[in-house]
Amino acid sequence: MKDFLYRFFQGRYGAYGTDRLTRSCLAVAVILLILSFVTPLGFLYYIAVILLFYSYFRLFSKNIPARYRENEAYVKITDKFLDFFRNFKYSWTQNKAFHIYKCPNCSQKIRVPRGKGRIEIRCPKCGNTFLKKS
Ligand SMILES: [Zn+2]
Image (cartoon, rainbow, N blue to C red; front, side):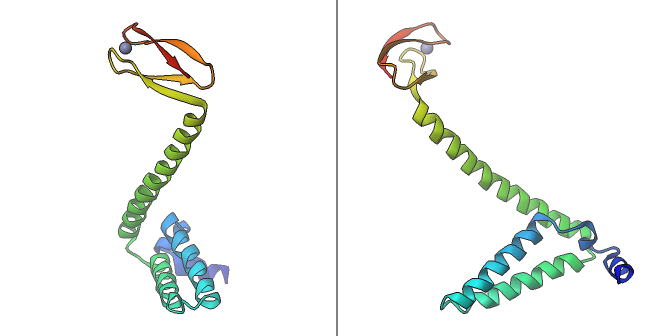
């Protein structure tokens, strides 16, 4: 049986394991399947079946460069998406701990810890000093 599977996957995209695109398709298909059963949104079932077919099509495909390119494009998009959320989270935590001021002289952005009362800020770029409440 193991031998059969090995021969079957020879030269096919699935021989290299599942990539992110295939895993995402399978995960979304499972979620849609569950939703189609527990909600009145029965049509989700068909979308799930299409996604499952697409996943299998990718696994059994012999056009490896094309499947590889598809996954690369998908990884690029999802990475951008994930980066956006990471950045959002980062600036959120930064916002809570710091205040960002702009130097009135050269408009350099300066990060100042919050909650220190009235402080004199010295611009690291032009040396200008100004007073602000942090
Ligand atoms: Zn400045």
